[in-house]
Image (cartoon, rainbow, N blue to C red; front, top):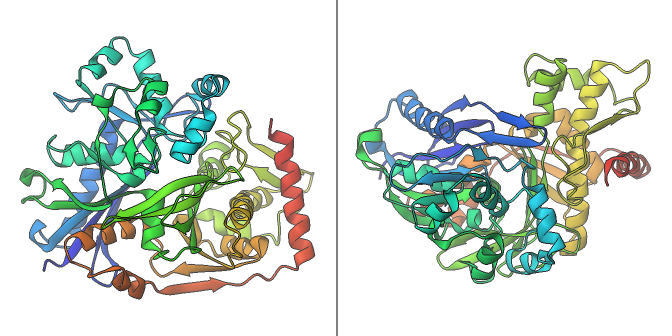
Length: 493
């Protein structure tokens, strides 16, 4: 058996590659940022070639760092920023436009038209999603509507659509495989989550030709093999999942009622609800978690659009820190935010509000407000938004949810994690391996080739790094959260 599984973790601001061993620990990693393209307020794009080149570079770099060869790699797992939409030419593999990123609000007018036409309930029932610019379907429609001649080419099968997983697998296999996994497919507004098939009624509403779409496959499955020229030999690609589903799998949330929260560019909370989809009464999403061996696991999900990205804004926009890592020290230099509340609606608000027009605001500034108070308020905004999600989940699932597993870059911020435990009144558990997104992709790939025997192997690998217990009195918790809700009400609508 080869020594390692290679996980390719293509994120919103950077591409990463991590080699994992049997114990679920990373043995080497490489990371490369790539440019964010911001053509207009609320609109975000990526160059698909920058996504590809950065991801390929990190894969090669991590193999070199570990002083191993392709012979040492049993399989590759792919995980990705979800909903980001790429269209490319079938004949050449060349993108026809920049990718429209999940954060982008460019298709908000299309969403308003769909709602006015009375289609919202149809989408909700079939896809488990809300009609919002977040998802891929309206992004495809926008590109087909605005690029001259593209729709007719798409109808002839000359143009392909993919989320980032599809695009990477297409490139890795030298254009031999146009596929996606069921978790990414469930985020497009085009997949019926009950049948797990592309839905003709939804395709018709959005005007998306079926010829563009990739084949939908399970999450732990042989998708194809890399071109031998890329790494020295063909390596099987046997796992794929959207980043949040991958993180949930990497956190071993295999039992209904188990939940995780990922603190990345955005903040994403997923709750395992078992093998049947369940509609949310609180504007959460019902999504496919993963499909393995013919069994499908569903999740409730709450999505926050701006979490860790607010720290980038403190760095690049306000200039009050030089590196993102400095925010923890600055925020911890004051005991609290001194009444300052920052609502980071830089690209609208996600769950449970779904307000694309909301914009960010800072409340409670006085003569005594310092950069440290603003940094503290920025950090606390991640926890407040997560409390919004957890409250909705507790109501939907009718479960107490007394423990929350956490991961992602900002989960290493101890000040944030303690405040998170305080403001939700629940135990927060951080694993030793914080990069659970890449780990989940590795696990899905490894299970398909027998590198790990079954899910009990994965549960056995999960190890606690630190646990945070709530210490804030209930009255203070309720008062602080009440102030947050008041601030949000001022920018919604």
